[in-house]
Image 1 (cartoon, rainbow, N blue to C red):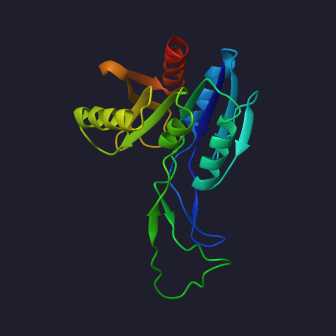
Image 2 (image 1 turned 60 degrees about the vertical axis):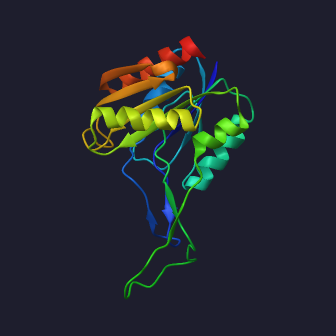
Length: 210
């Protein structure tokens, strides 16, 4: 089985030296890649810039911006994969009108942001038979709201499984987490533990359902 995993944050450049990003560490995506590798799967990781060492024994494609991650992932998926785990925290917005060079540090600066493309929906459009796992992060919501939000994304993007977590409770970068695994037909399962525990259960589901 071939599986592609995206991991880490992306950067949206304001000028050639400044950017906006998020706190994603890449731990979850790397944990999924390691679990898949250890089970003998053929693994490729498309990773944004992180401070942790990527897993060995897998193909690694390094990117920085959301556009790079989206384009490289779609290009790689076109070579033929059985499953795609979109664990990266791709920026929801990009900077309109990036400035070349370095903006002078004097006075106020106003940024205009535009929405980025959505990788999971693009992947489903281009690869209708691909098994796709998405992630949905919310901030300080009830468990009912978390599940409802994830189910809406599952249906909208026609995903097979979605992993939902509350980053207001379990912040980016922590080792211990709690997630909801949500699938078609009303399937909902809670997984609590380290990220390798979540990865283990997720690969179980992929091997069972893919």
